[in-house]
Image (cartoon, rainbow, N blue to C red; front, side, top):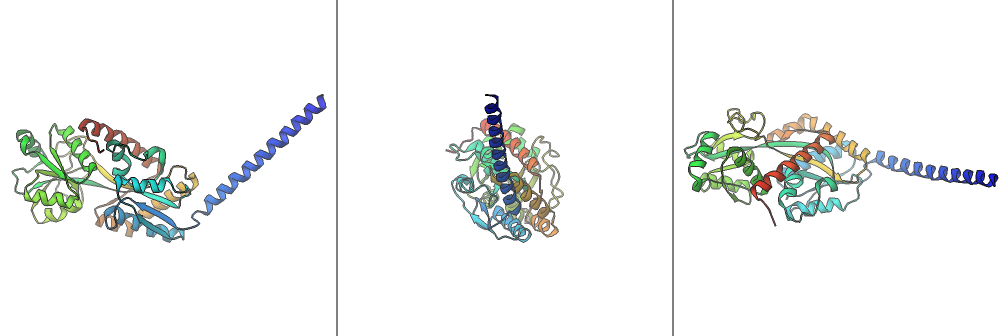
Length: 332
């Protein structure tokens, strides 16, 4: 009896050793595949039409990735359905690093707060790689309005609630406006436009009192004197607008808002691939020509670590959920 027990133990040990060897071989094969990454064309999916800021950044970074990794990089524009078309196409792809998504603040942290029946979960479905660039917003009014500062805008809105309206494009700007209201104790009627350039036209016509938008559409109207900038939502003043105060300098606290664009992958993408892409993106953002091209487009280079990007997403998911709830902002 003792002999057979020992033999059984020996057989079990051999079986365990065999399983361990097979697992080790499998892990080694996976690691070897990860180290060879990329092995074919990389697709970067963009949830916006070609020609916009997100598309520009994806193409700028994609070209550098192609140069550094030695594989073709293509941009796939898949707009529509509140970014769900683009998101789902990436979620369904093989988690091997060959299909990536340009993830924006709107797609990854605002949509979960405001879009009903959203078909993706940011933290469950995506693996953050790196936050590539960010940009603040600028608070503007019509230059003919009797308002010269953010404090005067707040006072005017409180004294004239029937004239307190604002406009921009999309839910992301609506929640930022709501944050402004919460910070200042004001109430503005939000008017949605198809693009912030349309909101600028409405502002110049006097159809709306103010607009909180990215600086791009406001640059021309500001330069020709038809629109007056009152404050920026960055922590520091912008080099392109050195005389425009930050929200904090204008007397509005806790109003630092930076829109951002970063790269994410399907959630199950192996860590070695995520780390390789993270390292490449960090180095790409350091390149002088890349930084110069970003700044020209009012984008400020970041190139964060995976951990920092994940922490940013976590913070903003919470923040925008609270703001959307306070403003009862919901898209069915």
